[in-house]
Image 1 (tube, rainbow, N blue to C red):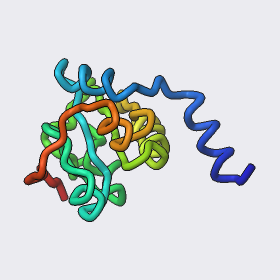
Image 2 (image 1 turned 90 degrees about the horizontal axis):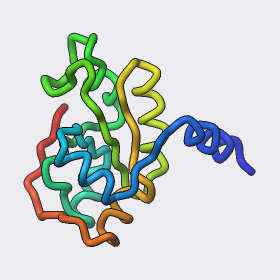
Image 3 (image 1 turned 90 degrees about the vertical axis):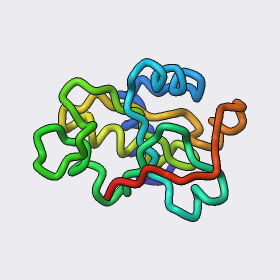
Image 4 (image 1 turned 60 degrees about the vertical axis):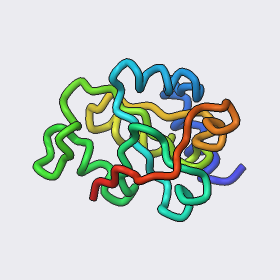
Amino acid sequence: MSEVDRLLETTRAGLARLTPQQAHDAAKGGALVIDTRTAAQRARQGELPGALVVDRTVLEWRLDPTCPHRIPEALPGTRVVVLCRQGYSSSLAAVSLRSLGVDATDVIGGVEAWAAAGLPLHTGPADVRE
């Protein structure tokens, strides 16, 4: 097993990851859905309705409620659900956010599993936050 696979295994042990349907339900219940996929991935797969697109390189700054560079939606106590293409980098991102005190998790299988579950996607535009 590679070191990154070990890291991912350890990371996921501390997460209560969601199925795509659970994530969809969480969004309906007020969770903040964050899409970290690239523009090219979103163009191929579709956009997640209601999700905010936040580049992985600035994710912690935008979602830390104590940071002056946060997005307005990043309020204390807000549940955050992170999605990526396949559910790998989103696990690492969710744990990083949790280390900042954010109630964060991710989706098993990412957007690929979301689409396979028949959950909604659209052609855009995305709500991109820089």
